[in-house]
Amino acid sequence: MATNFIVPPQLHNDLVAAAYQRRGFSADEAGAAARFSELTAWHGIKTHNAIKALHLDELFGSKAGGCRPGAKIDKLPGKFKAVERWNANRKLGQATAFAAMACCMKLADEYGSGTVAVDNAFHYLWGGGYVIDAAKKGYIAYTCCTAALAEVVPFGGRFPTLGTNPHSWGFPTQDEIGFPICIDWATSTVAMGRVQQFIREGKQLPPGTGVDEQGNETTDPNKVKSLFPFGQHKGYGLALMDELYAAYIGGSLPTLRNRWSEVNQQPGEKGTCCFYFQCIRPDAISGENFAAKRSQKENVNAVLKDILGHGNEKALLPGQLEAQAAALSAKHHGMLFTPAEIDALKHIAQEAHFAFDTASLRTVEI
Image 1 (cartoon, rainbow, N blue to C red):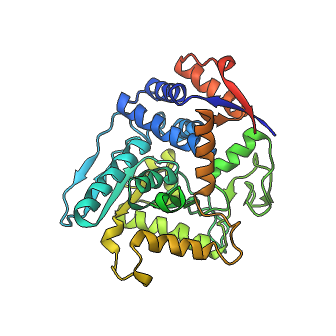
Image 2: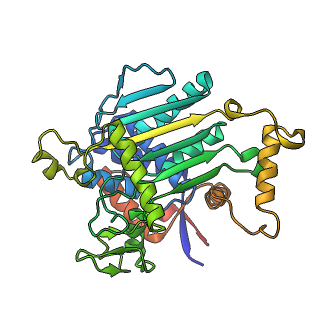
Image 3: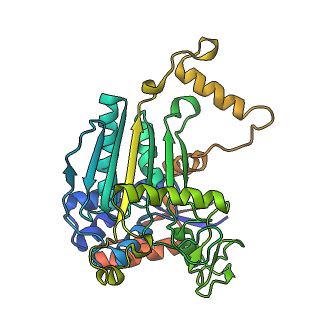
């Protein structure tokens, strides 16, 4: 059992929005950042919450020039009606991602499938939040992005040339099982946000996570410099997919990403991220010939029951833990934060000149 503080959504969102506006972001951008951070905290995502988001901006964003408050997205002309190409002009990643996924849903309503490719972006953090949001609205959704930095060593290599490069899929299965299936992961052994979380919590990492500055394997999160891909060659292949998507969209060299002093020394190169989004309407891919005359939804339910049958009843579905965390947040009418996270939020509040009275927060032992 551990003590958790309960932070009401409105207080949390006002704090996050104030922090972003303090850094020069518009009210709309700050609102998108707050909405996204609520999604992460509500679903129990510790690695990409407001603390991580503002830390990322601190390191590579509005101060470094990697993210430009108030930037406008340029929608480029194209010949494919179901695909849009955007130049984000380093706009805040969360605001860009919400807009891109909304565009994909609109395109899918007209064409069955919609795709948005985004160049010159700033990192959007937890891809699972965007696909869960779309799945709850009835779409099959996918997104991938290049990570902020190249921090992953390719399988068989020695130097980090890949990002933690996440993939995120969402499926609208809430009618069948009560929540959207969300398959979401970094392609490294863990997300770098997990390393930062372990530093905050004073915990050691599991063996096989990463290496220190000299290339020696370490479990000390304070010493981790680079990470291994998960599953050896399999994680490497998935991480490579993100870099190739980015290469086709317009991304530059992975080892330069967000390393602005190095980018500036190589005229013509780019240091920004790339995003890829896609939504599909389930009815658009239906073959309309389901076994035993089942409907599409009945067929999805039957398949899931078969997978979890045969003695597999205790197996978890991807997205189930996030759904359980969301249910816990709903039960307590707020997001749960550890004491270490509350301390981090206090520092954010101080920077934003925001009144954050932690003494009034309720606590729960979990």
